[in-house]
Every structure is written in structure tokens, then in C-alpha cells.
Length: 277
Image 1 (spheres, helix red, strand yellow):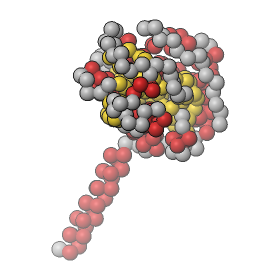
Image 2 (cartoon, rainbow, N blue to C red):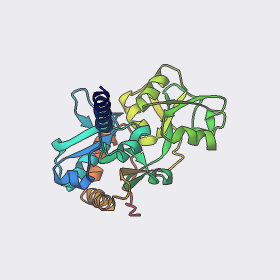
Image 3 (cartoon, rainbow, N blue to C red):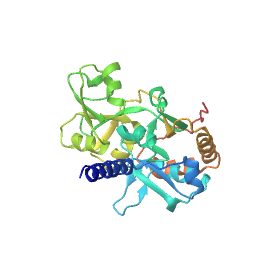
């Protein structure tokens, strides 16, 4: 009886260990190893019009998506062999560290703090933080006008809202959601006064709702968008940097930018210089 009970406990413990491993969802091998097998898993946003959007038919569109496809192509992976995985701001480092994605192309600003956990290729775009308000709002004209206990929304795991509170409007009330689309919904129903993040993201939402929302104020930060990948994987980082430079040089970068976010009166930033740190 004791032996049988011990055996049962041992088998149970083994099953739990295997289940825990499976739940991690990580894949062994580097991004280049997976690319050699003809496949890649790329983290993007699913709810950012013009940048990373999952459409109703299950397809994906936006500038980040086009950058991901181009880079994957340079690594030998066809578009149909890319698995796009939703990567909310607060989960991006974890997804990379756990091997659940090979690359993250998700309006991912390069910062020293993030570089402690992951590596970045790029930048592939330089954005600037701005504000989104209702079209009939006349009180908020820029970041300095957020004082007076105004309610400001951004996403968990991102830096924009805290940046406003620390540097520009100390009494602003911060509201954080998991996604920007939830912030925009809160803006529509009057739960918040403004949404803050990068101008290119806000321009996508404004273009999606013509006459209802507007971007106000001049950009007040510089956000270098990079492609996130596993820490210490210099070989992959070098090849992704090569791909970004090639996309800019052959005109594909400008074409993709114009097709995805160039409309609606928004003027995109010029092509950046890749930083091979």
C-alpha cells in the first residue's frame, strides 16, 4: 500500500511538472533557428488601427505588420508562415523571455530599463507622445492644459501617462487599461478627458472615427520603436537590423508607411537611423 501510494504521488508530481512546462508555451531554439525551419512567431498589437490590427476576417494589417512581414522575408520566412500573437504592452518582455514569441513588433519603445531584459533592433520608426481628445473639446490643447484633476488614460506597462504626471501635470488623475482601444472607449463615453500615447497610434484612432476624435498639442517626447528579441541574441539582432536598413533603402518602408498611416492629415516622421548598439 505504501509503495503504491508513493508511486501514485510520484506520477502525479511528474504530471503536474509536465503540465506546468506545457503552459509556458515557450519554444526551444533562437529566432534564427525557427526561421531556418520556415516559421516565426511575431508579437503585435491587435487593436491599433494603422499599426497592428486584427481584422474581422482574421487577417492582420498595419505598419508594424508590414515591417514584420518584410523582416521575416529577409530571414527566409514567407508571410503565410508567420504566426501573429497578441502582445499587450505589459506582457511584451515576458513573452520574449519565455520564448512565446521570436520577435515583438508592437509600437515598442526602446528604453534602457527594457534593455535590461530584452534586446532591440532598430529603431524602425521615431514617434512622439501626444494627446487624443473628443473633437468638441476646447479645454485641452496640449500637455500643460491637463492640470485641474483631469482624467488621463493610457495602458498598463507603458510609460506615457506616468511621464505626463511626473513632468507636466502633477495633479492629473491616471486611468490605466490593458489596451488603447479600452482607453478610446472610455474617452468616447466621457469616463476620461484624454488618452495619451504616441502620435502615430492616436492618429490611427482619430482616422477611424472622423469628426469624433482629434489629436492635440505638439509631440513632447521622442519614442524610438524597436523590434524586441531575446536578450543576448546578437546574431538575430544584427540580421533584423540589416532587414530594417534594407526596407528603408529599397523604398518598401516609405511605401508601407504611406499605405497604413499616411492618410487622414497625419505626417509621419522621416526614416530613422538604425542604432547598432
